[in-house]
Image (cartoon, rainbow, N blue to C red):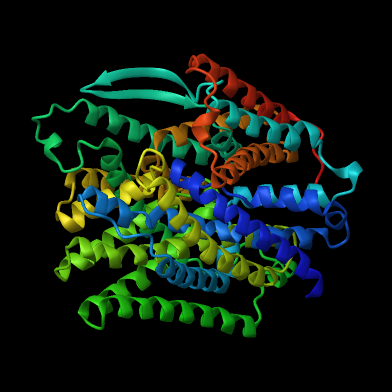
Length: 610
């Protein structure tokens, strides 16, 4: 235990820094990157001698677990908490200040629930052969490279370090407007809406694609193309048409979020049913069983964690709304949804990686159910948002903690480190995030105003629009919902048929592509295609290609981290815009440069087994 103190405490310090600084970056971009590779890199750099020692794998794994845990709270809070301020401003009302104490309490409740649930279900999650865990494998490769003898390491200069430099450099040059952020293949203006198909110059997205299998990336891209067809159709609607009179038709992004959310709902239900139906372990062995074994005493503590999280959540709800039908109904609803969505959060992380995991999609479904329950009880006033939003925060933190911990535990399993040894590191990292993130969110709102051009909070705006339309106006956009449900059924049928042929075509990947902005699916496919082209002849993923993809993700995240720290000290990101708007062909050059690096490392024949 004594030897574990240093990596855990170092990870806790890292997670305090990451979770706080990425609040503002996340509120600006609407997404948060997976930071596990970045944490490993920091630990490797700070403790190179310790990392290369006999217990280096354990050291880096524990640092990774505690160091990334706080970011789960960051994602959970910034996606949902801004809803209160945004809804009030949309209604022309003066919003209340960010309730730091309530956010700390509800974040703690969600963290305890997500932590306990994933810990109890560790064996089932990590033994499912249909969950490839791409980012966990990338982290395992980074750790393996750090602890390996110098003669046995892959070529780090051409893979990890080159990708770090290009990932950070490309992200910086796009922010400086030295390079265009995307290359337009097709564009057309339809009824005052600019429709375009663009290839993004985004090192993070291309890196994610470099980790995914080509079939999974194609499915995400296929969903993105479905979304683009929807955008093209909606943009061409005449203002007086029947379709255009739907509540959300004027807001194309929100309309398609409804369709994507409905698709995801069907894929969610199927994924949960399939997961619950797994009866036996596939390909398990005695060594793997030992790594995944959780002692009876630890299991009791995990159950206590869930019980304490439920008690905290219900206690807050009773204090906020009193004891009555509303409190009882909301408590039951949020607990059921938290348990179901936590399962899904863990599955998504192991399926597409935490960086590409559409956590907001699970909260979309949760928010929809919460609003319907509130409407059934006659609660449809703006004051009810003050109750629903913190409950959403608790559920989202639970999902995000499951998303992060399942990936970190998978990395430990791949490295042969007993998974339960990471539980203490995980909960300590979560607790730090639960305190740091609400405080920074309060500062961010006071300094920049959430929902403004300076701090747009796109996920919060999306949920605010959903709540305003459904809860306050009692209107549902039925045609996007029905279209999404139909697409979801088709996606599930495709997965069922493919599984009978021995293929892995997850319906959730298609739903992810429909729900998220189309540019994400395009960027992911670019990375997957360059990797596939490089490894086409030898037919295997090299350690160099894994390190290169992880380096692109880490480099982009590192640049965002540096900017986040600068912003906290008063730096305005607009000062980076040193050049006029560049030509779009500069983005194409950037994409080719990143792709060439990924291709070269995927083609490498110097791969060594770690």
